[in-house]
Image (cartoon, rainbow, N blue to C red; front, side, top):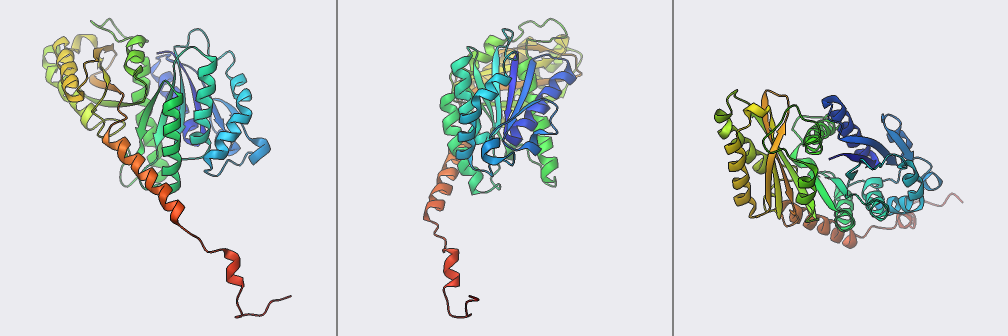
Length: 360
């Protein structure tokens, strides 16, 4: 799937960079171009992509401080500048646009829904959002921001491919190391999905193409992406169990959104050397995903790739009823209710006492 990436906010810009880097490193050519948009000048400076600084008249390049309402207002005011930066980048070759954003901060969670809506008005290709949920320990404000943003972008986009930070974070890592590892893991998964059918190292029996990705996401709503890999045997027949095992792990333990196996549609992609991909294994894996998701719209195919490993990539469409999404939205609602009930003492009141005489 040929695509143009637009990273919004700090997390969106970094993940966009990781995706473009992976695509170039692998030589896939699926990422046609990339742009990063932010209200914070310092976050844009190190990015090796085209950048657009918005909101200079409101925040003077210092960011919106987690205020996603301000982030939305700034994007609304400066969306013409952003759209101008896309001129000549979203060409006739593009088959989709991906808006990439962290949903917990201010610029990404507020700006991404506004930009997504504007893009769908202008372009005929599908506009998807690659959205990152904040971890459970990232604070109430981030939960509220993400809950509000997710509801909006699910309505404004063609589909939201959701990534849960908690699904990738390892213990013992620093925050910086953790986010870098998460970005690399997401870039590998999404990069392979975009490249499926685009750049191949051989001829498979049933190669996946862009239309199958689009049809899997056509139900709209929220999508998840699972991935797992293992060493491949030279003999395809010996890899039937390997394909089954990696497919199960991709759905049950390797998905971008844990506990999201109840889906409206699915696409099973098995990547590896064409001679090592077992046709029976792919078909059995597809049937297993059909049973696990309860969906009759499960597609399957090969992704010929020069590698000594076999990888299963499983795209699940329509997973908004999953346990993780429901629990996250409930936590966001609780954070909103808590904020409403909290009453803070007016700081000025502490000075209205007789413990000390006024200076003047």
